[in-house]
Image 1: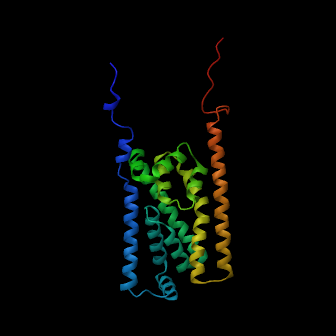
Image 2: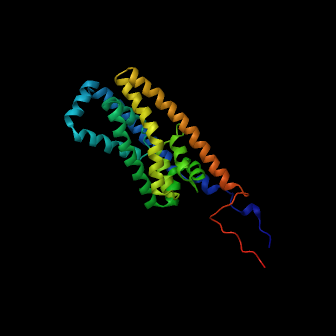
Image 3: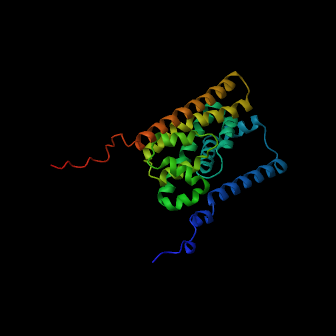
Length: 250
């Protein structure tokens, strides 16, 4: 009996009605951060840079620990890590700011990775919202260069890469190494900006230029390597060792 096409539900209805929770949470977090910053500016007497550095030095280990913990929380959520890295450069300088920022961002990224492993693929894809398609198309059957490319991509946040990597089966060791390699230039560039704002000079200015140039070079390299691996896996003429050849008939 022929089916009536007019009675069939339109395709894409489910996808179009899906609530983009990831985007909503990110925007809410950003709005709260902006409001908190405005409240602090008008209601709290903020210390000078020298006073802030002195207070952190007096706090000792606790000052470092609080910064790392706060950075890890930010890296595991939709809140941009940019402000934390720049603040690290302002408060701790180029060297210590980079070290502490890397510890914090690695802790947050790895934490988000394991949270997504616990939540499962379907739940994570819903939480990613508008980022789901980009993450799934690049990380499915992806690996080291896929993670590096997304991590280095200008304007692309960290948190979808963390959660997508865990949900889509990127091995933990591959994810960790790729995050270290690809996050270091970006963190260095942002920390260098903060260090330059706090103490303008030739060293900090040179660090800003070199680190940003390194980010651009690594982004292009990672993208080309990822494209080549994708092309190789999609080439029907290429030999795929994971699929055994069918037995020959006598």
